[in-house]
Length: 232
Image 1: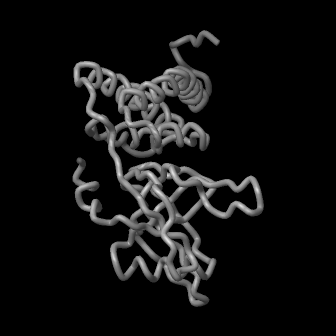
Image 2 (image 1 turned 45 degrees about the vertical axis):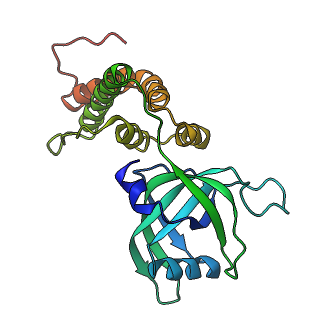
């Protein structure tokens, strides 16, 4: 069990915020809190652990007002709160762990409260996992360098820290504007290898295009003067 899961394992009931988005671990989520029930939720969790759950939810029918039991969500930890004079708030939260929504707890609160069970990825063969993680890291580093060139290289290229494969997979996933179904697939899988493989496919399909765009942009900034010919 990871350190974070070890810290929150005694939190069995979690306020749930259904949203039409997927939150991943290591992803920052800014929210504007204006509904009274979620203003109350924010007040309540501020007195305890500053934790709530985000579950992807897009109601199809008017009479369905909550995600189904068995849905997968992500714990969000409130990191910053800006309270406005009228009671609304702007908050910044961070995804920290995944959970399975086991069911709903009946309370007197206006917001939803879920019975949750946390989970992490299953152990996998390091002989397969380590080289895959390194491939994904190097691909992402190439894309980051290309993006840096496209930005005009006004600052030094930031060093991209290595991390263990599970964290790496989520850190890289949050860097892209992925569709909700792709993010949900990455959230649900308990295989780091599967998640890294999905990311490798995305990166493989992007890196060459990014590097070519960066080179064209660099040449354009020098009025087209370059000894290198581009094969377009």
